[in-house]
Image 1 (cartoon, helix red, strand yellow):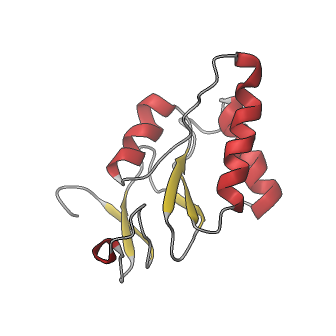
Image 2 (tube, helix red, strand yellow):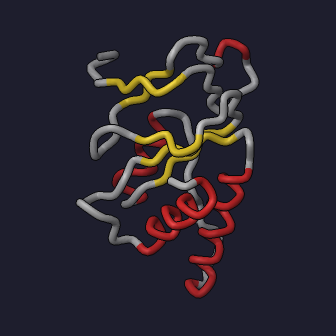
Length: 131
């Protein structure tokens, strides 16, 4: 435990969006336990310049967890609901293809995903990474 939080050891040498040498973790990285339990590192970039968090229930779970670990998340910009899914697909595809991005999945709120947007992210991760 660190500062009263349970931690999950997931890897090493992860850089959280900074080019400062003191931000590089030389030993295994400890991530806080996610809102639903253990988190999954879906795609690990050894020298990551960006860490993104995916999961279900953005306002309740994804955004608070991402802020806690100094990561980012999908931030929709379009106002037209007809474009939302396409924007989501384009965003997750960019994260998958970027060799400097680590992707962390905090999972669904329940036993299985109900959000079509989170389900689409999972489908893309399966297609491109075999997740």
